[in-house]
Amino acid sequence: MRLVIIGGSDAGITAGLRARQLDPTTDVHLLVADHYPNFSICGIPYYVSGEVPDWRSLAHRTRNDLEKAGLQLHLDERAVGIDVDARTVSTVSAAGEARAIGYDRLIIATGAVPNKPPIAGLDQLGAGDGVHLLHTMGDTFAVTKTLEEGARSAAIVGAGYIGLEMAEALRNRGLDVTVVEQLGQVLPRTLDPQLATLIETELVRNGVSVFCDTAVTSIETSDAGLEVNLSRGGQPGSLAADLVLVVTGVRPDTRLAVDAGAKTGFGGALAVDTGMRTNLPDVYAAGDCVHTHHRLLDYPTYVPLGSTAHKQGRVAGESAVGGSTTYAGSLGTQVVRIFDLVAAATGLRDREAAAAGYHPATVVSASYDHKIYYPGATPIALHVTGDTVTGRLLGAQLVGHSSAQIAKRVDILATAIHYGGSVDDIGILDLSYTPPLGSPYDAVQIAAHAWQDNQVR
Image (cartoon, rainbow, N blue to C red):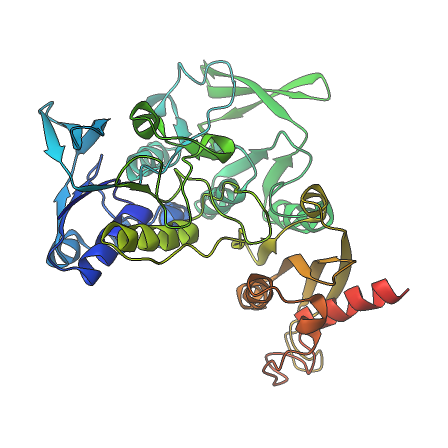
């Protein structure tokens, strides 16, 4: 059986490896549009910062590793069309050579493409001018080239987690950095405003200028470099920069599949069932190009995360060789480090839960990461969202010091939500304790107790 996979990032590679693991006779062909299969896009900020000194380290597996596992890699070969009836994928190589590759089963893992906001001048300016998008290794090398040419200041458009990670990376390289966010807070899709204020304060403490409620209207070149024109409350303004980075989210890359007749779902992403099957015969899809089944919602959503893509790719690869596994669903769990703070979230925020038909209440609490009498204790701010009718845990957000095991703690809460746990269940978990690392009631349990006490009142 020949399995063709379009896309060489998390979902595509994982799908191919899983298919070969379950059926070593499967003839797997992987089409990669560039020369960098299985590279960690999430690791780009840490290469730019210098924390990861060699860009090759961003590869989850080497090309040799993948070929030893039985994947036939077609690098620098872009898929340009799918003929479902003929069961072929048309491709064009970097040298311009065209061909058609036949398949028995096909997995589409084309990922996402960066959003391009309606900023005048953005389509006319490019990397050579110092204006960058950031989504591929090619984008990464373009950014580092601008830095090596002597850029001393940067404007980052977008205060999501990639934008803030890059703000830290560029500050670590000594640049003057300004972050511009059109919405009223940093991390607007991750944190409630009260917690986002903690992250903004940390950015400012480390020398990053932050402009929220501010739109970028245009980008122009000038004798001094680049001029970024702004609008805040209807008032114009501008800032100068040597480098402009536009990171305002992504959208699913679905053109190939849609042109072949694939149906779309939430947010224009490809519609798939829990086995990652599309409506097309023997065609599967996974990763940032598909909508995502959510464990707390009766409808799919869009969750473009590397962790989600890996899980979906594994299911797609298994389904393609006849398996019956299904994707268990996402909670959108994520964590991000910004200088000395870490922010994490899982599940639904209050307004999202209300829109989904729950009866949410969100309670704010704060406690220390370990016993305060042991040196080095740091505070953790927590928001816990639960359903006031059923008591079900619906979501949580945490902000704390990078030493405070924030990722571990959000994972406790994500596990409870995954299995339908209540807020009460958190309070009675038998969690580990020793004074240098925790408390008899962990911070997440103290937050659960605060939520319970709020309901009693």
